[in-house]
Every structure is written in C-alpha cells, then in structure tokens.
Image 1 (cartoon, helix red, strand yellow):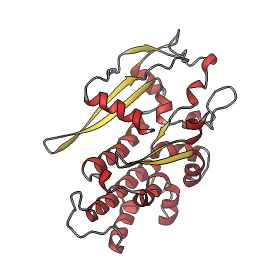
Image 2 (cartoon, one colour; image 1 turned 30 degrees about the vertical axis):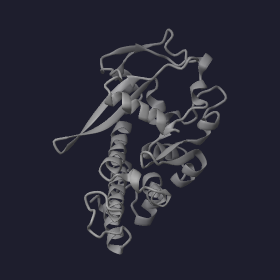
Image 3 (cartoon, one colour; image 1 turned 180 degrees about the horizontal axis):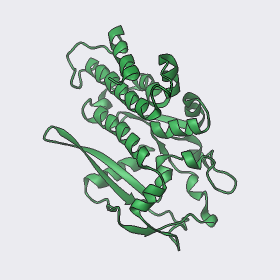
Image 4 (spheres, helix red, strand yellow; image 1 turned 45 degrees about the horizontal axis):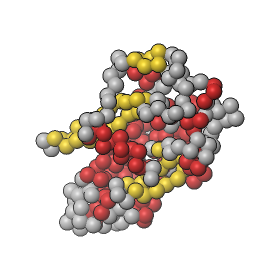
Length: 275
C-alpha cells in the first residue's frame, strides 16, 4: 500500500532512528544522463493538495480533471485518511516523463520529486496540551540504479532545498499534514471515516477551482496560498462536525449532524472570509 513507506519513515522518526541532516551538512549529488528518468518508473509518488493544485495550474487544467486523469485515490482504513498518488508512475513510467527521461512539468513537480534525494518527515507530538511539530530532513535510501551520488556536485542541505524552491511546499504541506494528524489523533477518524465521508471532503482538498467558482472567490480577491489555508480550515470544520455525529472529537454529544444549513453556511464563511 502507498501509505506503508510513509508510515515506515514516521516509525523511524518516532523511534529516533531516522538520521537527521542539518542545514549545514554536505552531500554530493547530480542527476546523470545514464539513469535519467529511471526513478520515475514503478514508484509511488504520494501527492498532497498543494502538489495537485500546482501541477493542474501549470497545465492550465481544472483540478478535478487532473485528479481524475492522473491520480489514484485510496482510503487508508488503518489510518482513517485518504491517500493520493500519481497513477501512471505507480503502474509504469510517469505520465510526465519525456523520451529523454526528463520531466515535462519540472517547474511544477511534486514536493517529493522536488527534494530527491532528500526527504522530509513530519509528525505532531502532544505535550502539556500543546501540539509540537517534529520534523526531520533525511537522505532517501539509495536505489541501485541511481548514479546521482557518483561524482556529483557538492551541496549543503540548505543549498539543495533553496535551489529546489521547496519552502512554500513545506508550508502548505504542514497545513495539510496537521489536518490529517488532527483527524487521526483527535477525531479517531479510523473508526468512522468511510468512502462517503471521503468523497465529501475530496473537492475541498483537491478541486479549489470548483470552490472558487461556486463562491465567486477570484484569485485577485483570495490568492492561492490563502485559499489553501481556508480549504484546510473548512475540512477541519467538516470532519469535526461529522466526527461528533459518530461520538468522537471535541463536539461529541453536541447533537451536530454536519448536514444542516447553518453548518454549510459556516463552512462557506470559512472559505469566503477565512474564519
């Protein structure tokens, strides 16, 4: 399952066995022609909402169409949260890989592709009633065919991440992973999340253009970064109320159904006004 690798990394992070790279640490890496594109075949490339938004906008394609044509969605029932990955890369070669092995959407490539051979693991720890983000940058396990670490350019971790222009991705990723952690930890989503609930929240996560059209929220009024934050807040409100209906979370027992007009009006206000 696509979630297994991510879970394995998080287990190492929890066990403190995931080697942490500091910003000033150095390594050697350059993609080489002889193995170009081989890392884009038969591989699970996990995607988050910001990845899909950036890719679809780069292709001037509606988010829903991109999601349908290029993504695979699965509800990970053990985690109680949906997982999305690039469909074609999982089945063969990535749909965006060109004949020379290079990426046709390189400027809009996913966060995972953007930082390779470095990875980033994030978990959320509750201490004294507060949630703390525990993050670690690490070197991804080397694939046998990869020649990138042989006579590559010398980098520091900071230089590599700056060159990859990944810090906006990290900011958006943290908004999303904090939401997923809240669902799993505070709402016990694995006990009640099902396909119907998943389908309800998918447009909020992966189809911002549809929401903008319904709300009349043009980019000139609400930029992409802010609208992403609002969408994550809207999903948080939705799943909090839905969890309450199943007897979980901070609103359990409040008699909230998650389907009444006042609830949907509140979600609309979050998207339109940010609160």
